[in-house]
Image (cartoon, rainbow, N blue to C red; front, side, top):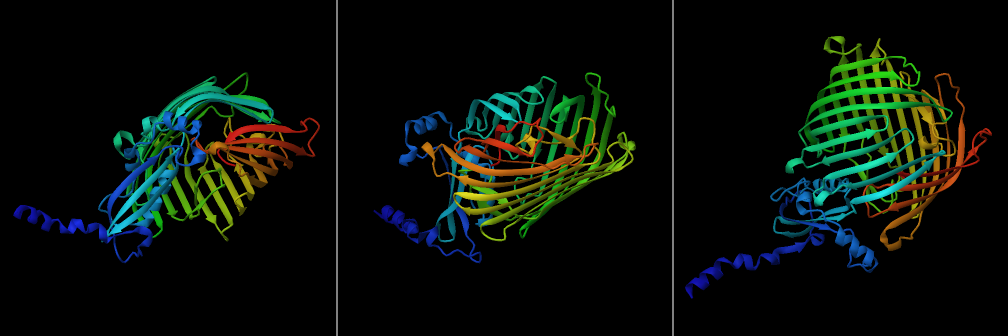
Amino acid sequence: MKKIIFIFFFNIPSLFADTTCIPWHAYHYTNSVPLQINKIKIEPLNIFNTDVPAENHKIHRLANLLHIKTRPDTIKWQLLFNTGDKLDLRILEETERNLRANQYIKNASINPTRVCGNKVDILVQTTDSWTLTPGISYGKSGGSNTSSAEITEVNLLGKGKSLTLSYAKGIDRNGSLLQYTDPQFNGSRRSLTVGIRDNTDGEQYNLSFGLPFYQLNNKKSWGLDIQSRKQIIRLYSNGIISSEIGEDSDFLGFYYGWSKGLIGDRVKRIRAGWLYNTVNYHGINGSTPSISSYKLSYPWIEYEYFQERYTKKKNFRTMGRIEDVSLGRNFTARVGAITETLGSSDEYFLLSTRYSEGFQPTINQLGLLKLETDTYSGKGILNGSTIRLTGEWFWFQNHNSNYYLSGKYNHIDNLLPGQQIVLGADTGLRGYPIRYQSGDKSFVATAEKQYFSKWYPYKLVKFGAVIFADAGSAWGQGNSRKIIADAGIGLRLVSTRSTGNSVMHIDLAFPINAPSTIDDYQLRITAERFL
C-alpha cells in the first residue's frame, strides 16, 4: 500500500501536465517569451486524400496504392530545426520553402500545434506528387517536331533520390540519357549527381558532388564539378541550317564558400574556387571555324548578397500549387584572373554579375527584374561582354485571370564558333519558324491575358487559356534589325499531381505582316515549366 501511495505521489505532475497545454491558435505568441520545441511529428501524406469524396475514386485509390510514399526520414533530414531548439517561426517558413522545392512534394506545411508550459509541439505535413513518370511526349514548334520517351523516378523508394532514363528526338540532335541524383548522399546534406548522355552527334559525361548552402544560416559550402562533352552545333539563317561546327570540351571546377550566416533578413557569402576548361572546334561538311581552340585555367572569388523576402502565389508559373516567389534584392559578383602563366591560352580579367529583385506595389501586382553580365577584358578571342536582361510584370485580377507582360534583351559581342542568338517559335516569337532571325543581339516582348478554369476533373488536371501577342527582333552579324510580330490564342494543361511542374502549351499563332514565305499560322505544342 505504501508503495502505491509513493508512486501516485511522485506522478502527480504527469497526471496534470496536459491541463497546462493549450492549442497553438489560442496561444498568444511573442518573441519575448521563448518556447522550446518539444515533439516533432512528421506526416507524409499520399497523393490523394481519400477522406475527401472528390479524391476517393478508383483512379485515386489505385494511384495511392502504386505510389511509394515519401519516408519520414527523408523529410526529417531536411528539417532546419530539432527537438530542444528555440522556436523560430522564420526557420519553419524557410523549411517549408525548401520542402516545396522538391519535385516529389506538391505541398508542405509546418505549424505549431500546442503549447505546454514553455514547450511547443510541431506538425510537419507534406503531400506527395506522383513521381514515377513513364511516358511518351510529342511537340511541334515552328514547323519542327520533337519527341521523347522516358522513365523517371524522382523519389526512388521514397528516399528523395532521382533516376532518369530517357530518349529524346529534338531539333538539333537525338540522344539518350541516364542520370542519378542523390541530394542526401549517405544520409547527409551532401549532394551527388552522375550522368551519361549518348547523342547522335556526340556524348556527354558529368559528375557533381558537394555541400550546398542548404539554408540561409549555413556557414560553409563546397563543390566539385566535372564534365566532358562532344557535340555538333548547328547555326541557322532564316530558320534553315546554314553551317555546322563540331565542339569538344572538358570542364573541371571546384570551390569553397563561407558565410557569417543570416543577419537580420540578409546573407553575405564568399566563394573561392578554380576553373579549368578546354574547348576544341572542328569543321563539319566543309565548314571552317574562325578559331580552333581555347583554354581557361584560373582562380576566382565571388561575393553574394541575398535578401530573404518571399511571397506565396497561385496561378503564377503553373497551376494547382503554392509557389514561393523571391522578391528580395539578390546580387552576385565574380572576378577571375586569367593568365597564360596559370595555363590559359590568353589573358583576361573576368567580371560576372547576377542581379535580381522583385517588386510588389500592391497585393495584386508583382514585378520581377533580372540582369546577368559576363565580361572578359583582355586581348584574346573571348574579349567582350554578354548581357541578358529580363523584366516581368503580373497583374492578378482574381483567382480566374491574370495579365502578364515580359521583355527580354540579349547581347553577345564576343560570339564564339557555334554561338548564335536566334529568335523564332522556340524563343518567344510563336508565329514564326524556329530560329527565324539570328544575330548577336535580340529583344522580344510578350503580352498575355491568362484565364484559369475552375474545371478540375478528378482533381488531376488544371486547364487554362491565353490570348497573346509577341514582338521582337534579332540582328547583328550582318543582319539588319527588323521587328516582327504575331498574335494568337492558346490552351494550358497542368497535371497537378505529377512531378516537374510542366505545363502543356498548345498555341495557335498568326504572324503579322510576314513575308509570303512564312506560313499563315504556326501550331506550337510544347511542354514548358512556365505558363
